[in-house]
Amino acid sequence: MKKNIAVITGGEASEVGISLKSAGVVCKHLNKDKYNVFKIVIEGNDWVVERDNPVKLKIDKNDFSFTIEGHKISFDAVFMAIHGTPAEDGKLQGYFDMLKIPYNTCGVLQAALTFDKLRCKEYLEPMGVKTAKAVLLKRDEPLHRPHIPLPVFVKPNKNGSSYGVSKVTKEEDLLPAIENSFNYDDEILVEEFLQGTEVTCGVITMDGKVTALPITEIRSKSEFFDYKAKYEGNSQEITPAEIDPVIAKNIQQTSEFIYKKLGFKGICRIDYIIKGHEHYMLEVNSIPGLSEESIVPQQAKAMGLSLEKLFEISIEESLK
Image (cartoon, rainbow, N blue to C red; front, side, top):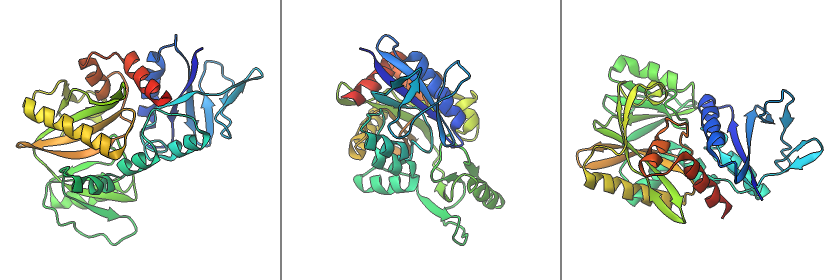
């Protein structure tokens, strides 16, 4: 019997457009011979089943079901395709935990921790994971000049897709960058700029084994890997990365180590800067982009995994 899979997307984060795009790709490639696939869109307080019929079917949030023509439809598992809140911060995971519905991502604790860039760094650094120095600024506290020399990155502490991120090279640009970043979060990071090669590594659980995917090297035409570089083709992404094989292996091992130490499941992606022979973790993405041009699908392809197989692995691991 086919299993009912909810692909949940939308939300109110700045990344909603990317979430909808990821969900469209997931719905397209999930195996229809094995699964009945339903796209569920969060629109404010309404959770709606997306379909061609203009009559909207709303999800009953008491048990995450909907009714059509007198028949109640429940779900065997959830495929999360939301970037930012309420999935990457763990809120939805808590809801599904209470309903005992499996989902294909990490749990509440891991999502909340990795969504908070600074606290994630502070958790991993004592385990030997190198990270860039950073200072946290809060909206409700007096503003002070962080003791980090220029150039620096200014970024929201809890956001993604490079919204609100600026590279600052001049002192007079620092305050405007901070004010811009506060439009996206009430906490921001001023982080040291590391000159080096930017790479990223996807990690999945496959056949019960934590497995690092081939590494991608990012050559951005912008000052850094910003929104345009990520989503408007303003970068060159090379998979597998053209870097020292020893460094590549070390990054894959670090990625698997982080995944295990955080107690992850599902698909994640971890970003790094290589400076000299060292690699520095930038952040952990608990629900990475899954559009056809996104990085994790590129890495899966380089490993010989189709999107259909990648998504099936993710769902089947959650059902275990």
